[in-house]
Length: 429
Image 1 (cartoon, rainbow, N blue to C red):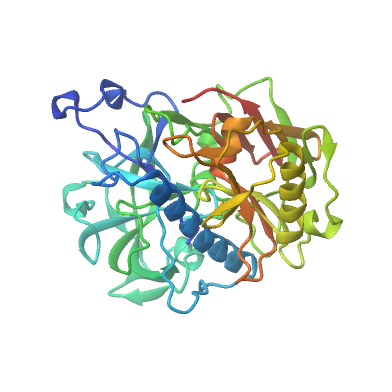
Image 2: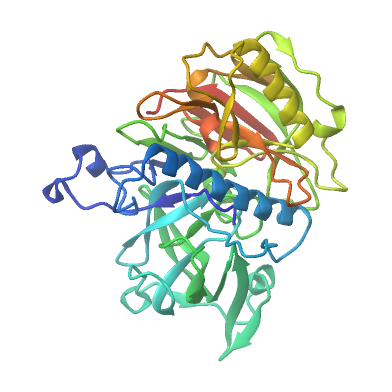
């Protein structure tokens, strides 16, 4: 599902294990460290390093699946369409540290701006990873009953021995669990009676190993449950996944947010109210505005069309008319005749290039991306590709997705009470 790319939360044990000492830095205040899944600090990094080509193609394939998932959300469906013979795999991109229960147990949870509820694998779960939350060891844990108001806010609720049970699909997986409540600590902020799903059964390989932390706008999301505390405001800075040190931050609440930052309006889409829609009005390559059909960028609540910021997709996707126009303008500026492809990347070069900037033009705000947010390079430097692609043609895609590679080393601020999203350059790598 959102396939693909999410953020996780986790406790790390120590330099004695031979880790980078920076892995031991503790969260403080209302700020959590954000790590990339491939970080040396991540227990979820691949056991065997992938080659650059394998790495890029793997992430691109997962992006395709995430776009299918996001398109299904906008269409108002509860089940993700899966292409024949193809598995939709969800793979977190970033991770954060979350402590649950009394005494606290630390879990690595996927951070996802396009999902609402939180859920974690619990003891006795069939099909879950070996790392689970042991409910019996928490003195503050409670299972919610069928008559709890929150039971009406989960997908497909049923009653089992008076417990509120939910069932849902997540990518190619299905999950089932009990709606539960316990103390959750984010950084040093304890949040009592936080409602989440306690997973009892999973099938498939799409489920983040240690749970999901939803940062969407739904009633069970972190924003809604901590509205009195964090005022429905948060920001993050995502580090580059090519950097040797992967330490960004997730900052909760209005305190400490940047003052010098430009904003654009957050839009509401009734077809999928959890997604963070913005009004993309144009794209500039170098100094020239690209000629894009207005319909390709238009926000349309009746169809779900428009542009979203998403923490889970890796490479920005534009609907085909918009992408083709941007790609062609980029190629003209580069002025290298020999253009090759690599998997789903169709604008690659085997010789050094001087790339133009690309500017996303939103209502009230322009975001100009430097080369580090636009290009991917092979380890040997022999291949350079434009790190964007067209939305998948095997789904009825109506979404433009501003993805996490294009957001890296920027502070992205979600100010829901004032219906605005801000972006400011910040080095967090």
